[in-house]
Image (cartoon, rainbow, N blue to C red; front, side, top):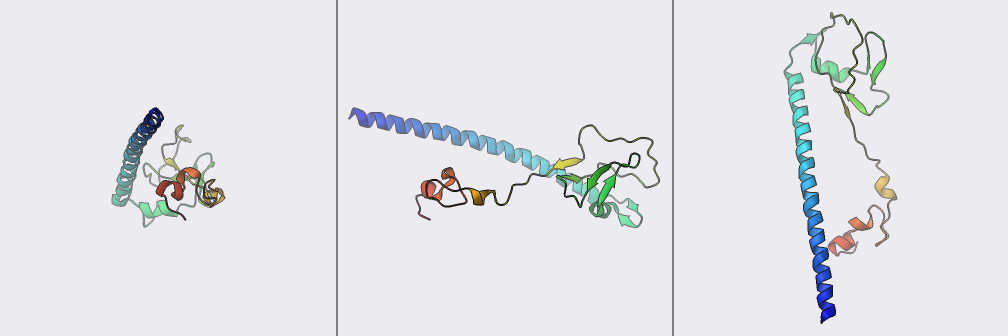
Amino acid sequence: MNNQADQLATVNEAIRALADKIAHKERELDQLKATYNEKIGDLDRYLEKLKNLEIIQGGQNVAEEVVKVEEFRCPECRSLLYDKLKETDYILLPNKVKLQSSKHSQCNIPATPTVVAKRTTVAPNKNKKITCSYCMKQGHKRAQCPEILYGKSG
């Protein structure tokens, strides 16, 4: 009887620990969702500003000009800041529009990257190389094995 009580206490402790971990992960998820929604809102506001911008350069809308940029160089030092063909990890987001007639007195490249955003990518074949040690199928780890999680086979 004492052995069963010990096992029950161990199982209860394990369930409590798992519940704590789940609650912690849910809090992390809520924080990530809030951050994500904030960034999406910033992008939406920025795109709305671009859409509503009525400055026309050379007969083209500014938003259309931003999309057509293939390469962007500093007007003074001619250093390459953005190249669409090289598929860089950054995208070009102007924070203000200058008319073509304005002259640059010096090369001003901001010290902090305020106009670029890092694109996160995941290798598409990464999950295919992973093999589950429980069911020996490819595409998931033991922690995500559907046979363990859901009690299903296959």
